[in-house]
Image (tube, rainbow, N blue to C red; front, side, top):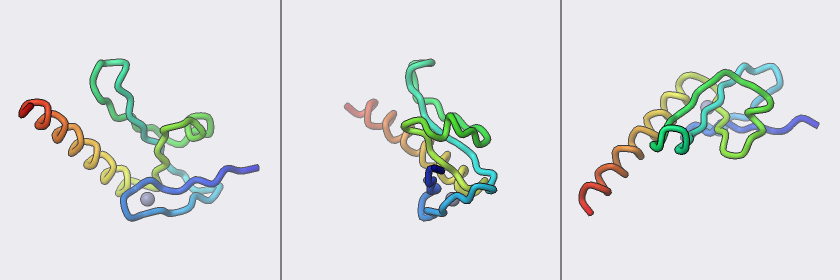
Length: 82
Ligand SMILES: [Zn+2]
């Protein structure tokens, strides 16, 4: 059975069809001891992993990147004002 994937882009929610060439994004903290954003072309094994964001295209990838950068800045500000 094919899994259903929905785009994680803000205000998108597009449903992936089997022939669509989508992207994958995820964040990780462990490797460099800071939040890192990963982006790669579609891979079924990575897509099925918990925490992976499924992204329909460049625009949604940019929006998610912008969101990520905003969150990082916000956290830095919060930490520096404590
Ligand atoms: Zn999208």
